[in-house]
Image (cartoon, rainbow, N blue to C red; front, side, top):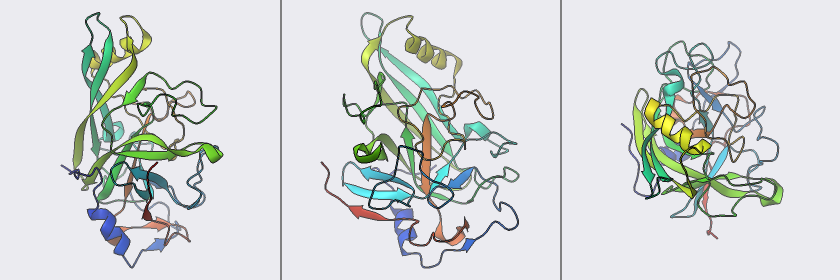
Length: 301
């Protein structure tokens, strides 16, 4: 199992990555080399979704994060997915590479749901033979999970023009991920650290979520939560049709194992990002050296 540092970020891989002096950069002349559901998100042709640019101080990097305790900002160059076998996913775990199960519901005296807990597991299946479609295979360092279906717990903390916040908010998260539109972009997406995950291993955490307004019996969200608990539904999904944090807020989704959900916006409600192992990194394209990982200290607001 992986480990999570007390500060919420595992820096073992981060430090190794920063001091690495050699990065192998190759083209895809013979097709994709590794059998893993992971993609480089920091160089062309991968671009941020329209309306969600990265921080202005580094427009070509991957997904940016800010640690809430230290204010340290970091950027992760790779995204991990849970595609199914035959569609870029692992032969062994497939859509279960990223799992999230409702494991406990909390009620008030009136029978309304006030909060719930989920058990989340990330399985590093990047070495799975035959999966196809990936840019990296090996240990995953500094793994972070974003919860795009959940608000940050502060009412009104959404970019203008995004509409309502939804009723679910995340608790006890360690970082915020960058998302937004133009000058209104900021670190606003709740993020949990999953530490380092060796190839073939998994890391599991219990995540807690609250509700701004209690959900009464028969409400859509109450039915969804109770059904997910009863039927042991996997409620975390991140297919390769989503790049970076493609939308926030997202719907809270049931991953039913379909290759690519047909409805627009139904391919991701969480995202997983990580730093590669320097000694085994194999990347596509040029111009990547120096952009793989950058971090700096910045005062929090």
